[in-house]
Image 1 (tube, helix red, strand yellow):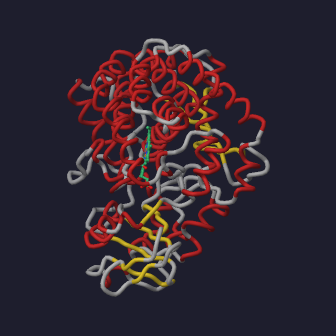
Image 2 (image 1 turned 90 degrees about the vertical axis):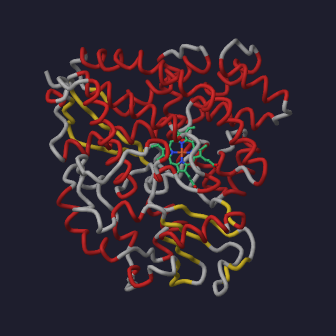
Length: 454
Ligand code: HEM
């Protein structure tokens, strides 16, 4: 699952991620704050780049660009640029994702899927390779063909709707529905869909709680328990009855390879619902960017040829991937965070102690001042090539996203379908966010209400 490190500001970011360590970033960011806030106008309270999280505190990264490293606190180490990348990759075996031990023992005890970031050591690589080989390498092409044939129905149906709809819920349910059909040969009913989409979003945010008491409290929430029951029932159905499907083949190979029960459960999660909220959010953020840049009227696009539509969609996605880590987005931050699992030397001079935090800013180049107006959404840049599943937005190194192909396939089809549909969606209030659980004020659900413009 992916680190949505950016939403629950006080609770998680302050504690484990950014504010405490006086996050550092190039001075061009500081200079550009006011510019960006003028550019991104909608949903001001949410859709805003939280530069206060990245303050540089007097350090100018540009002057340090040949070292790839700095720190203004002995327990926090910041890596960036090409040299930083080399240091990060070379030392990865000393790192683990934050909250690993806590979440893994909690998930084992309570029988929640163990998120892949938290599976340690060699087993992590085997688990990841199995998922990649079986599902993605073998089936991504046929899934692509399947979505190609299917997606038009989604937009056609939406086009007929005259009432207000929450596009976030619609997309996430659609993603889950189609994944169940394709990988499990199973048609989910409305209630199941509703609960599974709730489960996915809510579960993900729990990953960033770093106290056992908070985890217990967060997941004992009634609504989540209802969703969990449905999820568990579906899993048992697929394990016990093992109906014929793409998943059943994968299931059989996992059993033959002596997978522990919890890991079968976790692979079920990876294939069924993992990351579906990130796909839905990313697509909506793209629509929001387009709305801000007044590019959201598909009337102008529905006459495009297939080739032109594909070219346009590649440009839009490339620009989405470039800027997404720099908005307050609940999907992906511009850095990778790790905790040192033992004492080691980062290089000849720098000692890292067990428990220290390492931040690798792998996406600084996305807003480099070599780019013309770097903070402006402009899909027509000549220099921003669409990298698809190879985009650095999906991370780097051992834990690089294994949902990258799936995500890119989904976003591509949703977008091409949208551009071809001729539909124009009018958002009512931009992005909104409501609290899921009154005990966890900072953990929010996204809502994006739209009406079809007739
Ligand atoms: C816009 C959508 C997505 C983005 C931006 C994204 C981004 C990322 C990033 C940056 C990481 C690396 C985290 C780290 O190094 O700490 C990651 C890991 C991961 N992602 Fe995604 N992801 C997305 C969607 C998905 C989807 C749909 C899946 C479904 C299978 C998925 C599954 C995973 C898993 C299992 C990992 C952990 C891999 C590991 O630990 O080896 N992601 N993702």
